[in-house]
Length: 493
Image 1 (cartoon, rainbow, N blue to C red):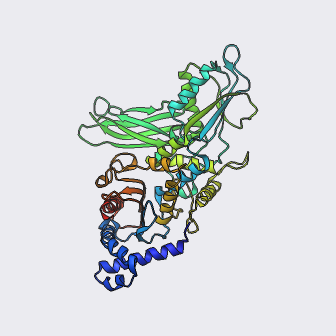
Image 2: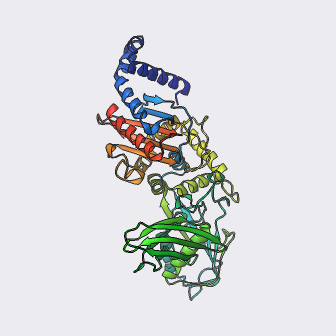
């Protein structure tokens, strides 16, 4: 990796010359640069001016910025503004997590959930207990739990006499990073566990009754006994907007979902997503539901405890390949998958549960192994929810370029980036850059970012990152400004 100080000095020199030229005082300075360098500066002057104008819009007024644009093939710096300045990256942090996980595990890696029993099924298909040993799979959905249950039926299981034992102890018990406080019940604050279902979240469907004053109709998906509904919502007069409040309260071995407020008569209904408080118990409840759906009778309680690797193995259930997990969490900015991958990266010796400290240390080691300089970076979590993270535009560009240059990592990472105006978190954004920008978005209150790849109108391919903190006009205006910067980028080079 080239020395950062030398590269940064050269980039700052070029940018300084460009800015002087833009203000009308640059002719003599540019002419002082020998030969081809002067020609390069003159060629970049209009591009730099256009990008400076894109950064000067009201939506970024007062913002701390870190910006870098480089040529995809050569790595030559095309534009920078405080590229080494470490800022809050928000969900741009997921780029680091994705690349570290791909580098450590490989794109075809699958996390395995083990299902064991004290003894194989008897002649009637009966087992004493079902023992579930988590492998850290962060993307087991209701559909996959159904598949696991169907596989158990195919193996002859028909009855479980004394409940389930769930072992999620490969991760520590810290479900939410301490720097995320306060934590809400919203789906993006889903807790992190080695055993999960539906990304630690569930859907609440609320529809109106027949007449104003009637109770609202509430349906939970999945309809597990672990979640009980307290329906306090009513049908309101036609023509008004919904005014709903949905929360959940942990009650020992179950959770109460409280739905309050009103939804107007004739409304099509509204979906609200919420996280659970106890992800492992929720996953066990989903498994119970799917076992019953497959004709396997389940009696007895759910317990949390250690499952011995010596117990007879009934099934090793393989989840999605890592390439699919990366696509899911990068395109849709899924926080829970990102954090579970960080903890999986931090797994050490048998019996030592993984946590954020060991996980972020492993992320750093993987990225430094790819030649990325992280000396001025601070990694607290994997999703970017933490306000303790600090990353610069240069680091993000360096990580993107290191992955892009790798035959092992590049296709998976590039394919996972949201496409402007098409899918993921850019589906309803960056319409002026339609199909020409693939980039990870980021958003916290007062923080936004956009980092990825672009193909300009002149068919030049560039890698870029722009991070903005502490702007004055609000998140929507800042996001629009970053989309505007991406659009200017397409015309500049």
